[in-house]
Length: 137
Image 1 (cartoon, rainbow, N blue to C red):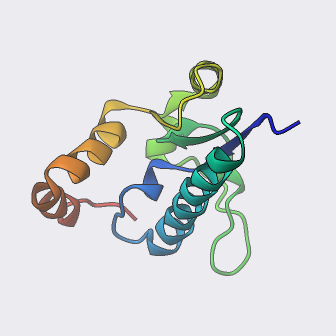
Image 2 (cartoon, rainbow, N blue to C red):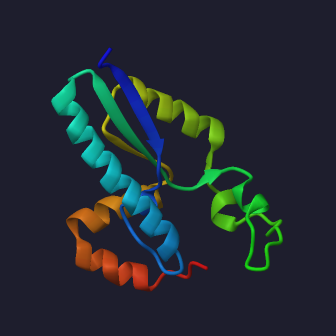
């Protein structure tokens, strides 16, 4: 058929890094490298195979309630940033819209995390200074 659409949900952390999130950021950066390369390879095969990387910021889900801590037990509490995140339904609607538009990459989230992606891209030194001041844990 040589046609289709591959959609991968990554994270804005695939574009930036913050303190105490090195493993997560590394995994998401790897996704970006892989799918950017795959998109280029598939384009040579067929102009009808699309690859969309969806990069959410904070989305209000149960993820932190179910997250495991170092000893293997559940965290069992809602992270503040997740609790204030974009409602999952809103995220899903925006993601579907981006897929329908065949976007290569889309950032979906609050203004802080989406702005951070652009801040790093256009003002990397300013981003580096700002990220050092974060109190993320």
